[in-house]
Length: 344
Ligand code: WQD
Image 1 (cartoon, helix red, strand yellow):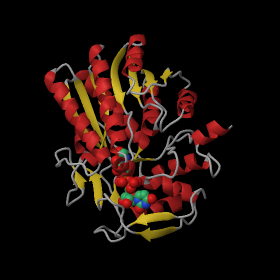
Image 2 (cartoon, rainbow, N blue to C red):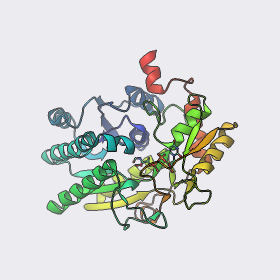
Image 3 (cartoon, protein in one colour):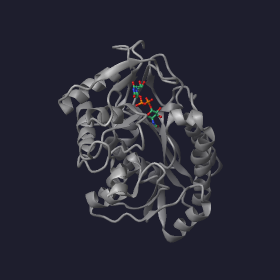
Image 4 (cartoon, rainbow, N blue to C red):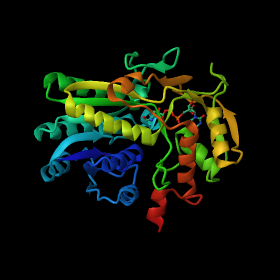
């Protein structure tokens, strides 16, 4: 039996495919390649020396998705597919409700029709209401502040309703904090199309000369140095968390929810300094106004995942920056991997 990975060509999806293959799983990937490219699937095959059956399928195309289930015998689904830019979601909410919520509804219907009732779902720390301390346990108050986060919250609720309606469903919801870094080979990594929204790929592109200067969004927060503090977690640690969650859904029914973070927070300026050490160069930055929707501090209490999944993030901030920098250096200024593959 195989694992279906939706969105498996994406940043976290492709890294999880490597861990799945290295753990002996067979897998199938569906992805509409709207924010990724076949290049990452090819790299996963090179790194693992294993084949990855791939279908260019959009979850909004329920018939095509159903035919994938006719050709494979799935034991579980790891569901990454979705759009995830907070800023874009405020400009184009329909795109987010369509892709994330409608896409998941289609997936759950097809899974139910084929009696595939085990899912690991890619959720996000954006489902949490801001808290004074910034430390998030799974019991924290929920309340997303943007359409992207609200789609993740809606999906979590529909998965809970699904499980309540039929206790044969077994679902693990993983709330990611800030995934960064890259596979140690430097062959796959975060490959955002256009100008990166997130801090780390932006810093990496300034370090490589592709972008001129890092814009620091606010230095008047009540934090160690006034800049925003986040829980950055290595994408490979995150990927390994999915293997642990897969074991969980194999052996228990109902819905389980876990924070996947390190439990440590780093400020924007601390991240810039860490990257300067790793890239051995100054990284220019300028202080700008706060970004709408940002909170001062957000980091995980990851103890539940440690206790129940036996999962701990082991890679530190230096390794995250080293792996991100190795990946960034692999592509000449001006091209990311997907641009390279399309150009040459
Ligand atoms: C981190 C810090 C910014 C860019 C987002 C999504 C979340 C998840 C991870 C999907 C903040 C500051 C950023 C820049 C900056 N994605 N910053 N200059 O906003 O914590 O989380 O990505 O699940 O859903 O919300 O990540 O990297 O955008 O910001 O100063 O150019 O860096 O203000 O303090 P964020 P981020």
